[in-house]
Image 1: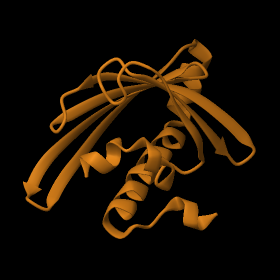
Image 2 (image 1 turned 90 degrees about the vertical axis):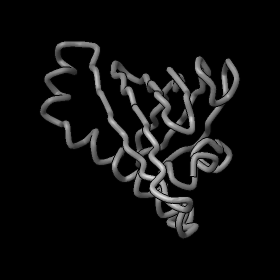
Image 3 (image 1 turned 180 degrees about the horizontal axis):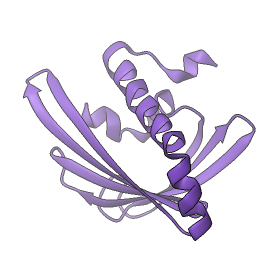
Length: 137
């Protein structure tokens, strides 16, 4: 599961709207690595920078996403349930750059949660059944 999650060449299969993922610096997947992700969400283009804050896989990985005045820190933890099953726990922290964005963020918290949950469900479907979001297009 972790090898699949780390395979950036297959990320578009569960990251709905991902148009490109470009490695910018550091060793890919390792602490300090930086990448640029470009998404198309309907009519809106979204660019973000991904920085690997820490990587202690197979136990955990912390990644920071920066975009348009907002930061999302994602703490991934992986717990072996059996030889063929892993529990993936994910904690997200959203920070907003301006007072206005902070207020909007509180009002629209669900707008930030839903894509995160959907992406995790997409990954599960792809990992377990080969179901790709690319097949929906």
